[in-house]
Length: 390
Ligand code: LMR
Image (cartoon, rainbow, N blue to C red; front, side):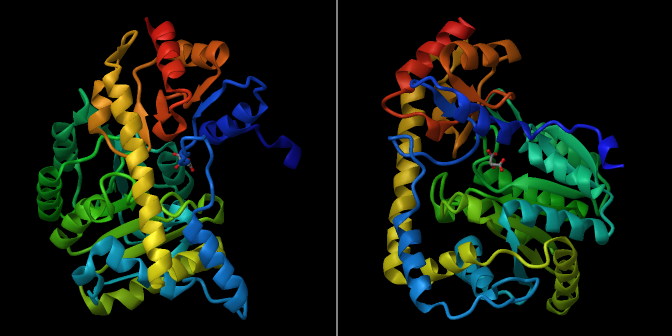
């Protein structure tokens, strides 16, 4: 029986990790999966995380089960950071811990589906796993164009909203759009919030890179604007990138209810999905985040580390933009974009040639991870790009 299972291709993004590791060439450049790297090409554990882990080893006295919602001190300590101090006090918003942002997106979509949403609209290209999650849950996906000519395609979004039915959900990236790096401006967020509120759309906001764009508050403006405008919203959050806790799988889902007394009933649905899917989320990473946020010294250290990451990515973006063009690729728009990612207009053969002839690894979509570029490899990358696209 099991022998009859058809072969599934490995996740294309995750497959790059192994392909890169197996390449013996010393000068190889990894622009694949979205992890932050220092200028030495390393992805170290944050000093703040190490500090919190040391504290946990000393003080944690039990690892007994908590429940499907995970650690609520973790969930609630993030609320002022995500929502701002005032909104964090709302009795219409609460959340639960999930295994990474993926768990948050999955739970948000499952809740939307259980509540009667027929379709989830999303701008494309999007993070490839968004489509996989929708398919796996059995939710219809409808798409619109996310960006055109280096800017968000507001016409395509408005057209999609006009076509959508009340009660459809829209999956929107809060900041540092994956894969394009092209975000909505504050004015555009206000416009979007007003139209989706008027139409009765349920927003599913995916905030996986807070602090990696312009700053913690700046990167959360979009989700705050939308949540203020609508009665109900779902928000998936990831600490995997902004605390560098990737493999510890640290995330949450937040629910904004129309009335405070709806919230316990909605959260009971979230709890039962969690119980049937992963029972309860892993605790270690969430405990680390909770310790960091609660401790002034660790929190200061974390904020400094996050600011350093931002600065480095801005420097890489500025250096790429300074190069102007590489072959047929215009690199100048990259300076205006945000976060880890940018899309280069390369075809499959060019991406293949970069890998084969120049040991440059990037996603098959043409997405590059900006943080994979360093002072030591950026000129080589630009030269390789010029060669394959010239
Ligand atoms: C990425 O897009 O590279 C990251 O979000 C990692 C992942 O899980 O795909």
